[in-house]
Length: 124
Image 1 (cartoon, rainbow, N blue to C red):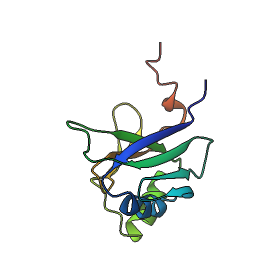
Image 2: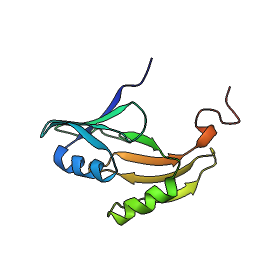
Image 3: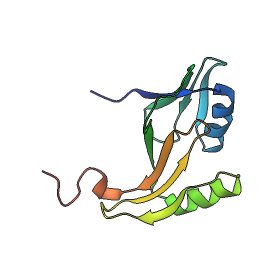
């Protein structure tokens, strides 16, 4: 089994499209105002955004994007006007994370984990 894509909700797909393009995702399907789909710079999975009338309640959606050049990428994104809730910070679970929200409040975590992504010392 291979993860094909993740789809997240949005109240304004056009605004989300511009945001994710700033993050470096490449638009491959443009069916605005209802739907868009992106390729990521690395890997084979895709990422899409679809129009909803109402966003999920509670904690909502969290999406993790891995990048081994995390600190450099965060500085580049800040230069493009992207605002972060947490700048790159080493976490007790051995990942370095930066956190931000997309225009709909979906939580995005850019992170660097190296070997600890799938093989932390406590792996069973």
